[in-house]
Length: 350
Image 1: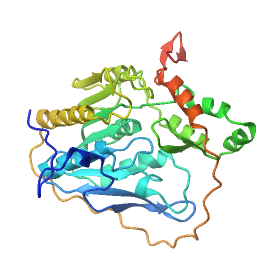
Image 2: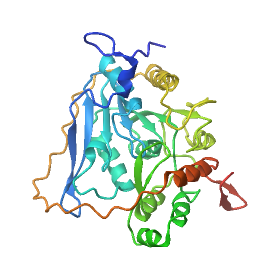
Image 3: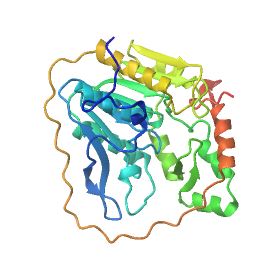
């Protein structure tokens, strides 16, 4: 196996702490999806792209409310820059540099549209999808929709169907005071600080969109490519046993699970980064793609639509107590997010 050195070219080796930088190595650009929101603003998201001529390209699919300068993406960005592989990362709508003046509610369906647009219009040729948490869910859907474009998938602590079988949102709803609960039932988004320190929002519509995109793990998935999975047994957000279901459900013969005894859901230690890059290099070495890539396609141009007057931000809800969220996520982490069928009924394993 060749080296997994990720230092950048130039005046010298980049320090290891560069993975935790909060800037990108290429200018931020915006992809316009060619249609408008209901409030008149164009549908768009921010992305950063490293050009390269080697095959395959690498595309990072972000996790739940994760920004594109996360260290797991940065280390791949540096690797691709040094080794000549094209690389793409992006902020899903409503996250990071893709936030808008309207501060609208996030949408699971819009996030998948962003991922589809990124793969279809911002990359060329076969792509390795590196995905974290919720992004793994997106990656499996991308592989099923674009089988000829997905070279392989590397999933980091995959959260597929996460929260659906554990009734996470319903449990959260029951913990609210009656007035707030009524507002959520009426369609407003609930805002809280997740157990990994990021403020997130969720709503009944978001939950319904997740259910609409649910993946049936009880039958073979429409994924015809090699898969690598990295998970830690101390993950208190998504149970590691979920990965066993994924291994069984992917039809390809080359599916490997790297299971760590120590580590949490974020997988952000030096050891985690090393394992991530070893798995990526393994996919590059074992499944080489000959030939150089043509230049990437030009993004869809911005629609020359007149923007509607910006309205003020929606009424903000009081953030939920952090202690409540820690207890809730701690309890949910003990369960299996992907339910087993027992006696014809779906049950979560405690």
